[in-house]
Image (cartoon, rainbow, N blue to C red; front, side, top):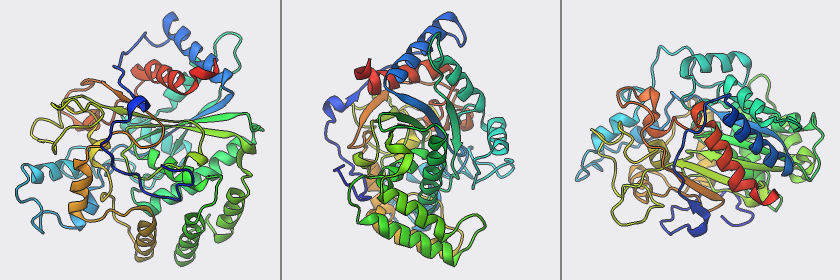
Length: 424
């Protein structure tokens, strides 16, 4: 995306990313707490310290929610309007996208969106999902311990759980809340303009970071004041304890005056985030996208996902093409707003953020088979089959691997190599 992206949607480009993409193969690496594991993680800690990384924040949401945004697809009536005619397997594909029929979502689960970023939510999420699409408290603590080798200063690591409301209003409010959170957290550490914070976001949390990059842009932004106007109007029409228009005004002033985080840079890593919102390079430091990708094309275009829609009877449960959430939860998908006021705000934001609408436009976007955003580096990782096909809650159709402890060293080394090798 261009500098001053101004909230433009990311393009679904099929062109070769060239040297912006590489294709590593996942290797579990040494056992946790072994000598080799400690050495590998400590080396990553050295690289982060030399790059002036002063903290790492891990972000994720509820992995057993409507990850594919099927509610919006049903609302626009794909099957009812006959778009499925001539498209093999589309009805069974939609069944695997819906949380009520794909084996992922269950009403009896103890927690549901919206989530709060507090210790009780962390604990409940860890009990429910464990390490499937979820950075557990134990994972984050172990990551921090690993970075702190002999003679190295500790790099604090924390987790952040976002609301998991998968529509424009939910993600924009989450972006606002996260900026306020990270501003306070960084203020406690007295960052300078030479310091960096590393953000690692799983799945749709990466969409929140894309919005953050646009909100935090250093350049002029025609869209930013309009975004705040929409939110202010919505918050006035639908008051909630703990949020106010004055709060928005304070944040807007801080964003426009560039007074956040002492001028420090925010580096961003996304894990399995669908290509959707555009990124503003002026609003972040270094940018990396990691995607579970299995090359099954016959035309040699290895940077693209598979050529046709999934044949769901066998393909998605076996994770044949990699991360299907990343491939299918693109423009045109979402959960539905739960009030008239939220619906109106969502429509207003949609006009700014997303030019794609309707079932046929979703089909168009999925068939572009785009894996790599137009900004930042991308790693298309051959993770293979990491969980049995019988239980979708164990693999999330290829979307649940990034956050598991067995891949911690691999992920840490890939981030350090791609983002910070020039600093060593």
